[in-house]
Amino acid sequence: MHIDLDAFFVSVEQVENPQLKGKPVVVGGRPEGRGVVASASYEARAFGLRAGMPLLTASRLCPQAIFIQGSFPKYRRASERFMAILASFSPYLEPMGLDEAYLDATGFESIYGSARQMAVKIKQRIKNELGLTASVGIASGKVVAKVASELSKPDGLLEVAAGKERSFLAPLPVAKLPGIGKKTEQKLKSLSIDTIGKLSIMSLKALKSHFGASGEVLHRFAKGIDHREVKPPATAKSISRETTFAKDTRDRPRLKATLRYLGERVGADLRQRGKRARCITLKLRYADFTTITRRHTLSQTSDSDQTIFDVGVGLLNEALSQGRQPVRLIGIGVSELVEAGRQLEMLDTSAQRWEQLNKAIDRIRKKYGFTAIQTGRTLRLKEIFPESGEGYTLQTPSLSR
Ligand code: DCP
Ligand code: CA
Image 1 (cartoon, rainbow, N blue to C red):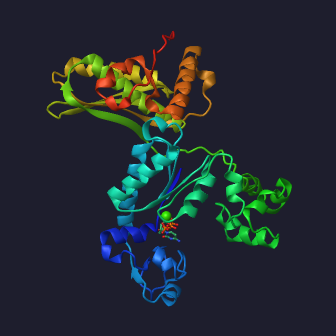
Image 2 (tube, rainbow, N blue to C red):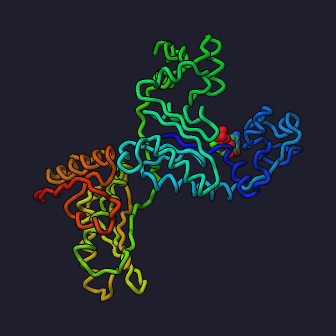
C-alpha cells in the first residue's frame, strides 16, 4: 500500500482555517517574494499551478490565489500524527518523507478484511482525526502502488490486481514512473520512448547502455516488477512495548504471560528491522505509580524471543522479590542495537534452531496477522487481550540449551 496525503501543506492550513477550503491556495510565501510554490490546492492546480513553480509565475497564472507563508513545525506535527495512525494499523511501515508511506498489508485480512477494506479504514481515520484526505494505491509491489496512489488523487483509492501490473503501467507517460526525472525523460523522448509500455519492451542491453546501472531498475519497474520489501526505518535506537493492566495485579503467571507477549512483539520488530540487541530492559510501574527499570547486558547480541523472555523473567523475578505492591504496568525493551548481518557461524546449533523457529513464526504472522499463531506461554492472555481472537496454538518446543 502506498499512502500519500493530498495537497499536504495546503490541507493542513485549510483544517486550521476552513474559510480556505474550496479555494485556490498556495503555501510557499508572498507572491512578490522569490520563493517557489511548496504546495498548491487542487483548485489552484486547475490554473496550472504546480509545486516548484516560482511564486511570481503562480500569481500571474492565478491572481486570485491566496498565498500563505506556511509553518514547518505545524506540518511536522501533522506528519507525526499521520504516521502514528498508520503505525497503529501495522508495524510494517516505511515512511517516505512527511506525507507518504509504504505499508505492507499482507496478512492483515483477519483483522481488517481485504487490503481495500483496510485502506478505506485508514483513509477514514485520517479524515476523522486529522481532517485530511489521503490517496492510497494498492499493488503487489511498491512502484505500482505508488503510481496508483498518484493516479487516484485526490481522495482516491486504486487497487491494481496481481498480474495486471504491466498492463496498468503500459499506457502511462514515462514521467509517471518513479525514478524518471526530467533528464531521463528527455533522453527517452529522444529515443521516441514516450510511454512506460514502450520502455518495457526496450532490451536490458539498450537500457544499460543508455542509463548505466539504473537501466536495470528501469527495466524491472517498467514491467511492474518490484521485489523491494517494506522496510521500517533503521534509525531506531531502541524498541519497546508496554501495557497497563485493566486491574493492578500480583499474579505471576499473568505477568509472565504478558511479558512473553510483549517480548514476542519486540522480537518480531527487531528481526523485521534486521537488528540484534545487546541490552534488555524491564519496566514496571506499581500501583502507587512508582516506576522502576532493570537492565541486563547480554554477552552476545540476540534477536530471539526466547532470550528476550528469559532475561525479562529473570529481571521480573528479581524485581518482584523486592517490590511489595501490585503491578500496574509492565514493559520490555531492547537497546544497543546492531545490524544482524551474518552471524550464523558463531551460533551453536540450539540457537540456530530457535532462530529458525522465530523466522517461521515471523513468516506466518506476516501472512496471517500477529495473533494467528500463539506460543503456549501467552495463551492465558485471552482475558487480557480479547481482541486477539481465536488463533492457533503453538507449544514452544523444549529445545536443549
Ligand atoms: N513540498 C515542498 N516543495 C516541493 C514539493 C513538496 O515543500 N517542491 C512539500 C509541500 C507538500 C509536501 O511537501 O505539501 C508533500 O509533497 P507532495 O509532492 O506529496 O505534494 P502535495 O502533498 O502538496 O500534493 P499531492 O496531492 O500531489 O500529493
Ligand atoms: Ca502528498
